[in-house]
Picture: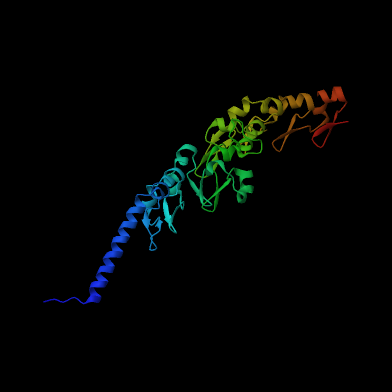
Length: 275
């Protein structure tokens, strides 16, 4: 016949009681508003309702609305991009990136540590410790159709964010830029804007200043004949070619020009017509 000591029976009863109380506490937590709202669905060792597991948090309203989907120190918290992607604000406002304890849309932000590269090439926001471009906003520095004058888009046609960089993806990107207007670099090629001979010949750069050919991917003077047929020759006497530029090389260049006849600037000096 098996005998049970009074101490053994007491221990067994106490364990049964504690287990029952623990189950009751867990059930009470699961049925509470704190569970539905904040993921406080499990009883901690002190019997207080807390977020103990990821499952507690993922079913909560805070996870669905704010991205607080990971259990941390007894509460539901945001700890990663994955948490942010669960939030309604990710779908509605693009706030899918974890930063400084919250969810943000990095595509609409600039980082102070990226100020220099933001100005030069549009890599404006830090991600993974690297300055990068994530959206047209970084390349154009504005959400408007017209890029800001000092942006990578306005200066060099780098208007499209691709693989963390601003690139010239289309000819339309290039046509927005100062490089297109000033150097004829209006065609997108391998992510940059370049000039083509056909476009240079058809451009104002050719007829006005003799820059009808291409040097270093920009419209440039490649022929003395282009200088002689340009407006710059007729107006300023810059009719001779030197180092891919049209200049006034002699008084003969100046003598037939408008600046000679109207302003008496008929002597060639340092590549220009002077008095």
